[in-house]
Length: 296
Image 1 (cartoon, rainbow, N blue to C red):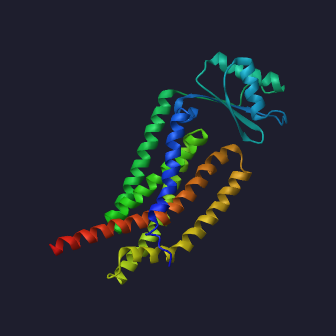
Image 2 (cartoon, rainbow, N blue to C red; image 1 turned 90 degrees about the vertical axis):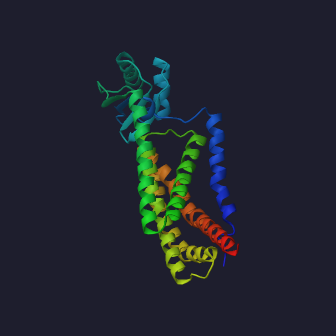
Image 3 (cartoon, rainbow, N blue to C red; image 1 turned 135 degrees about the vertical axis):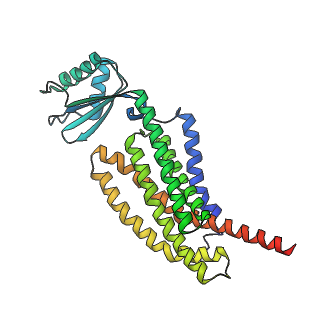
């Protein structure tokens, strides 16, 4: 039988390498690409009115040429487009819409909607996102510690943290904008990926009760082998749906699907190949330490 515990160091290398690459690109790119949800700015939604030439790049170029403002343009649906900018005055907002209206001969007199987010609101959103993630991790630690043991809880939270760091590393490497949708995806993945970890830990607990004389490494290897098919099948069926959403969905849906795809893949990987083998190593170290104390 393949030993997951003996190869734990090799399995641990993949997420570590991805995180290390993210750290390098963080300094190369000068930090994260924060959307206006976090740094403040203006969101303006306009009707495309079925204009085939009204592409994201064309609108961005029109705004830049007329006002000098670098905007982020995103298709919200088949007939709506969102223009995002840094904080600007009311006169500049009017100029942005006027430039788009004139360039593409729009009939609408006003944007469909306009909203402004202050930098202070962005800072508050960042703090709340971090707080909610910490609360979720703490509650999971308490639950798993009660249901299994505190070491299992620690390993589960460590792998959750690893999943989040991998997702963040992918975003900073490819400079994907980080917004509130990303935060929602992070919290979703935290809840999803813990499921596989709990299933495997539950199987480990049952096998420990039935095979108390076996080593923890042997028990964990057998438990993972018994659970791996179920975990992978669950993840594949989930991925099929999310990938289809990413391929067929509008950009706003893709913004949510993309981090979910990353999270499901890395969450399944760490649940199977990282959490349980590290727990076994911890338990074997404790067992060896206890034997050494008794032999003295």
